[in-house]
Image (cartoon, rainbow, N blue to C red):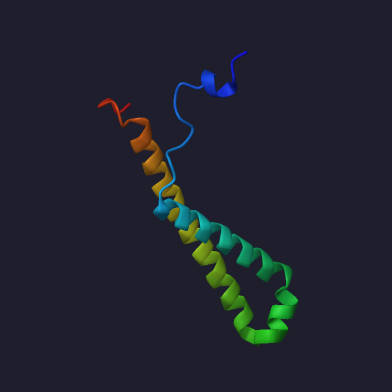
Length: 90
């Protein structure tokens, strides 16, 4: 019986570097902070007042920028890993 890994002729992903791991952790942490801030928005508004909405916007912006940067880094690493042995860039 063949495993599913034997059926795929290319690697699923490049090995994760320290930079990629740190970026992935930043994206996950930003998503968690945003989720908790949204979940407890009423309490956040009571705690910090009118700064709650700008804080929420800042958390969303940080998450979006970090997610975009991580996706670009990950895509570049995967492409470099995939084409590491050939000069053919399809």
